[in-house]
Image (tube, rainbow, N blue to C red; front, side, top):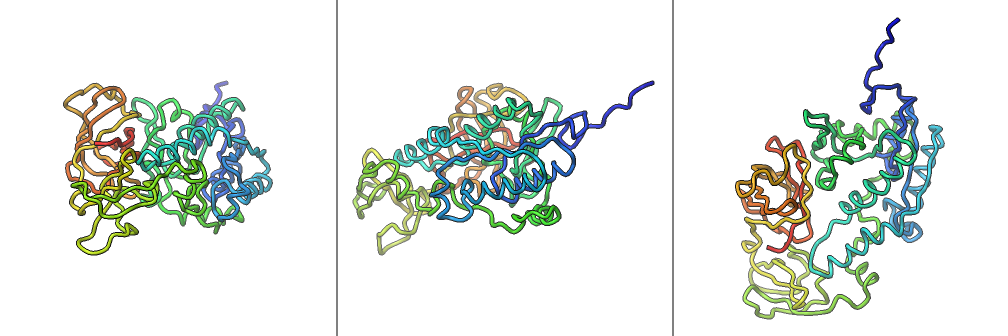
Length: 380
C-alpha cells in the first residue's frame, strides 16, 4: 500500500509540524512572541531562546529596550502559556566584542555605525544560529519583517510585504548558508496591525506593547554619553570649519555630530549650514551648504552578495540595481561596479544627501523586492 506523501508545512519541510523542531529568537516583543505562539499553536516543536545582550539592570531605565529584564520576563511568560521550553543565554561578552566595541570605535573614527546590523550578522545569525543547530532544530525563526522565498537557484531574500515595516536594510549581511536555515513567518503580513491582531487572538499580554525605538545599549538615545562611558576622554574637542577650512566655532567632540546634521551646531547667522563630513584626525567638523551634501559616487567595502551570479562576473560594466543608503529612504536606481569580490563603486542615478561613512548601502533587484546584498559606505 502506497504511503501518502506529506505536504510541505508552513516552514518548508515535508514532515508534520510535530516532527519539525524550530528555535524561535524571542526578544520579548510582540513580533517574536507572535511567531512563537503561532508555531506552537500549529503543533511545531518550538524552543524559545532569549539573548541577554546587555546589562538588563541598566536597560530597565528605558522601557522597551530589547534586552531589558521585563522583556526576558515577557518572553518566558509566552513560553509558559504555550507549553514550550524557553532559555535565556548570556551573550554579553559576544555582544560587547562584536557590537558595542565596534560601535564606539567607529564613532570615534568619524563614522556613523549601525549596531543592529552587526548584531544580526555577528550574534543572532552566527552564534544563535549555531546554538539552534546544536539543539537539533530544523530552522531558526525570527520576528523580522522580511521574506524568504524559494527561487530557481535557491532561497532568496525579499523585502517585507509592508514597506513601512520592512527590515531588509538591517539584514543585508545574511549569507546564502544562513538563509537556507532561517525563517521569517511575519514577512508576508501587510501591516503591524495584523501582528497585533494575532497577538490579541493568541491572548498575549504583549499585544499592545510599544515597539522599541532605541538601540538597546543606548537607552537614553544619547550616543555621545555612551561613547564617553566606553572610551573615557577619547572624544577630544576641536574646531567647526567651513569647506575652505575657516574656523567658525568649536565643538566638544566629533561623536556629537553626524553627516547631514543641521541642528545644534552652535553657529548663528547666515545661510543654514549642515555637517558635510567629519575629520577625527584633525578634530574638525566640516560644515557647508545643503548642496554640498549631494553625493553621486559611493565607495563600498565588505560586500555581501546573495544574487544568483557571482558578484564579480561583470567587472567594470557593473550591475544595474536599486540601492538604499539609509533605512528610511526608498531604493533608488544605481550602477554597482565591482572592484574586487568585496568592494565596489556605486554610482547613483540621482544624487543622495547625507551619505555617511559607516552606514550601509543595500542592493536590490530592479523590481525593488529582492535583496541582492550590500556593503559598508566608506570615505569617498
